[in-house]
Structure formats: structure tokens, C-alpha cells
Length: 264
Image 1 (tube, one colour):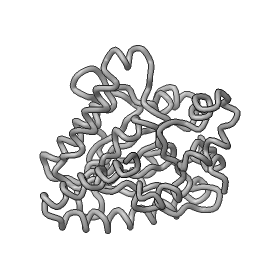
Image 2 (tube, one colour):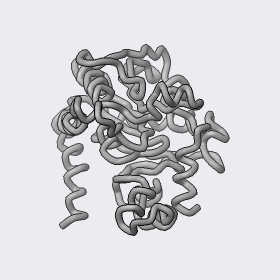
Image 3 (cartoon, one colour):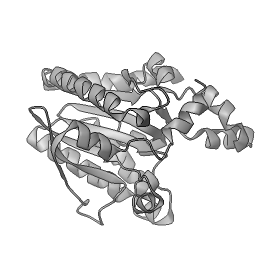
Image 4 (tube, helix red, strand yellow):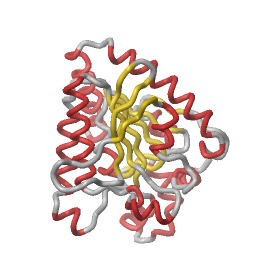
């Protein structure tokens, strides 16, 4: 399948959201709100849940399925208070020894004037720094779009997985084509050049696992993908819990340090 076709599937309004996965995979989810600084950001959801017998913290970028929901969720583009809420929940998870599981689906962090005034760049940068040293197992799954620093702010984790028809990139194909060729209509060509599909990134060792979807996308058989993901999460969390803290942190550091090889 051409890369841009996968971009279109990843953007489908019918594609399952973070809350769909949270409610299907976990039990006893309790949502927590607010960054204890400015306000609650509906583009980021998070809280405490059970994964089989393990208490976990789950966080996700939430898009809507209708125009009204998307407006309320800011089309899945978090403000700085959303990232600060996520960090608050991750630090709480660290305090109580709970593994952290993040669901990523965003075209990018919100770039409005208010977000910039409240420190969007600082909020993302602080998440990157703090997540690198969290003393609990961490897993992130790209379930739709994984756009730029807005996605990376929840993806400095021990494992990064992608659904089969998700994409993960520094910017959108339209943005890439506009910058490189001054022509956003060449987005399809850009998507091929950028290597943004799950298969491309697995081959490049950017992600560790690709989760199978039904033909045409997981919206066609949500239960298949969600049940498959649940089983893999249970298994991987049990593996990560067995690692001693020094090994966990060292392997996380090496995971991201190796990306410097691409620029050397």
C-alpha cells in the first residue's frame, strides 16, 4: 500500500480513539484531570486502570468522532497544559510504581498564540527530559498519526509500537512537500520519501513492534486489533517489570542514543 494511503487511513474520523483502546483493553479505568497549574486539556486523557492483575497509568491523545467532539478535543492537538497533565500523571505513576502506557494520535502539538505564551516548547522539552529517567516500565503505541514533537512528548519510552496503518514523522507530508518543493500537492510523493509507515520505521529500528490491523484499517474490526494489542501489552509489561532499575534506564538511554547514528 502506498505510504499516503496509510496516511489517509490513519486520519480517518472513524478510526478508534485512545479512549476506545483504554476502555477495551483495561479494567476499572479512572480518569484524572488537570495539570495543577492552568486547566484541564481535553486533548489529553489519562488516569489509573488495571491491565489484568497489574495497576497501570494510561495516557492518550484523544481525537473526536464528530465535529463537536473534535472541537472540544481541539482535534487531538494538545496545549502545554495537556503535556503537563501527562507529566503529572507519569510522575504519580513513578511514585507508586505503576507502569505507564501511552496512546499517541496527533497531527502535532497546538501552535496557537495562547499555547506558545504558556510555554508549549518548554512543556514538550520537559516531558522528553523527565520521561528519559522515569523509574518504571513505559510503552507508547502510535494508533493513528504520530506528528512531530507533539507525538514525541509521549514517546520517550522503553518500547514504541505502531499499529499497521499508523504513521510517525517529524511533520505531515503536506508540510514536507510545502517546505521542500513549495508544493503541498506533492504530499503523496513526500510520504514515500519520508519513510513514515510502520513497516519503514520497524526496518529502521525506530519502533520495536507493528500491531496487525484488519484489511482497510482497524476501524473495520476493532476487537481484533484491540485484543491483539492487549495480549502483547500484558506480555511486554511482565518482561519489563523483571528488569532491574539500572538495566531499564540504561536500555532506554541506549534506545534513543543510537538514533544519533543516522546523523553521523
